Amino acid sequence: MTPAMKTGLRPDLAIIAENVALDSSVLDVGCGDGTLMQALRDGSGCATRGMEIDALNVGACVAKGLSVIQGDADKDLAFYPDKSVDYAILSQTLQTTMRPDMVLEELLRIGRKAFVSFPNFAHWRVRTSLLWNGRMPVTRLLPIAWYETPNIHHLTVNDFRALLQERGITVEGRWFLSGDTQCSAAAANFRAEHAVFLLSRGG
Image (tube, rainbow, N blue to C red; front, side):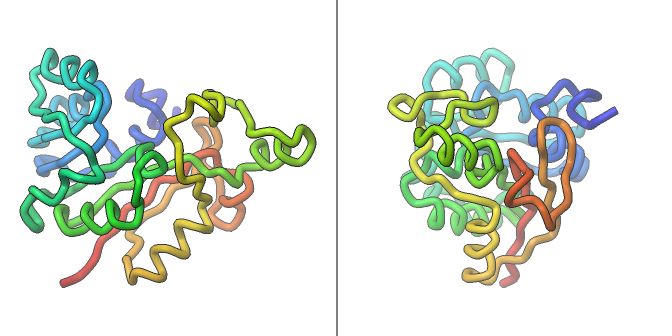
């Protein structure tokens, strides 16, 4: 049974939840309706805080008793102190930010470690749709049409790896997902629909 099946969480969130240490402090940036925060609070005893840009999602979080503020990852992370939480988490949000590189740097400043998950735009279904149809794909991975999607930076696993190397960021863990199934790192840029990285930086 996969982590997602056991927890009922989205597969990338299940991986994050399984790998956050018990009783940790967590900042979930782009926390949505608070599903991951609630799982970490109730299942792992974590002290959770969140930031979410959508007012309806903020309301959903508050209704669950979660501590969440309305904010923009591109603008509002600067207000958090250095190393103020054990983990800063950004799940399926990096590709929607104006400056993903700067947001990543902020996560690593705020958190002792950072989890980042994102869709892989080099997945073979995306490539096939572009090659044979000549159109931006609408798939299980990318279910929203190009004119409605919040995704503005279409990164791949290899793009992200290159950014980490360029910035001297340490990879402490990485998981690559095709649906609920993990795939190998070697084939990830072609086969993975989503990627999850656990990152840190010394100093």
